[in-house]
Image (cartoon, rainbow, N blue to C red; front, side):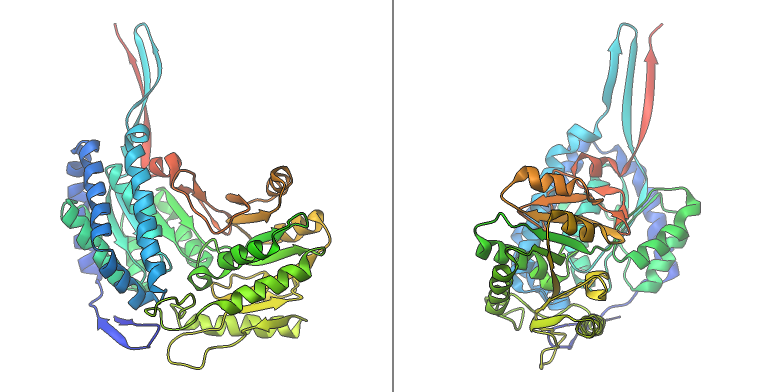
Length: 455
């Protein structure tokens, strides 16, 4: 398998993929190791994961350089990702004892009723390339804390980072056969679906998630899928500081080149502030530095996947044919690598693919609306349900709008944000199940009820 630098199109290295035989061997070793890992006290497992976080901090420059080399995100954004992973690990390790130990529900004379949270067993984690540290720790950290063993399949576009994760977990004290990497692309993933794992946790596209869910359904084991999004954002008419709102929402749409599960993918702006907002939004986008992701100050680097360039071109061609106007950007950059200009389309409509299908790139469609009711109508018009954002001076107004939307997360005066303290979940084609928070810790367990009566 060739690892290609998306900024230069050069081959970084070649890595041998796993085979059916090597994956079966790794799975067998995970099965044997799981009861032993489960028997280790939770406090000791917590310390191992804390040490892993410390190693992330110690090696951040090297880890960031590797991440940037294979996915193309600007170096500072790679550092931000590693630090963000450490923040999540901190919350998960600090709260594991509270949510993974036995919970007494009734204690009265002669009777105790409690819940024990047992590990699922051997977990299959098929992960994503856009934030390999963040979406990875959402799964393998709570899985390991709960006493599971893990087969971690990084995306073929972030395999080098997956190897770094495995190395540092082992260095932190995770036993050799408690965590294994599955190296490869689509074929490797399909082999994993044939093995008798005790739970499947996937992050990626709706199409792939649906396929995984259907293939493992007969196994009757947990299968969580975090999939795509077409996340809406609404700018109301009661805002005074349009300039800062435009800058914040542009960042929400274009950070990591728009390659975020919860990136803002479509914007609705009240007609009273529309012109001012568009003016400030375009100014912000034009101010960004584009270029090599290793160059200081670069905000927009290359896309991670060459195939996405064509997806964006088709969306923009469709948008222009249906009445949209491109105010900035609109095409590939004339240079080596998978670069696409940050692009703003106005006069957008729901006839356009740009406003309905996931873009996962540095493009945004902006649409004028008359009032809150019309904004809600358009925000609801989607097959996805990951996040939604409202910018307004009124918390009550924002919450009233957000309550009407079928999404896993609602934002008021912020966007493109994830916190370990609250669940991360999708609805409709954005997925099902939750990671993070106490819900995400317990997602890797099976509760057992105990009724204990003395005689």
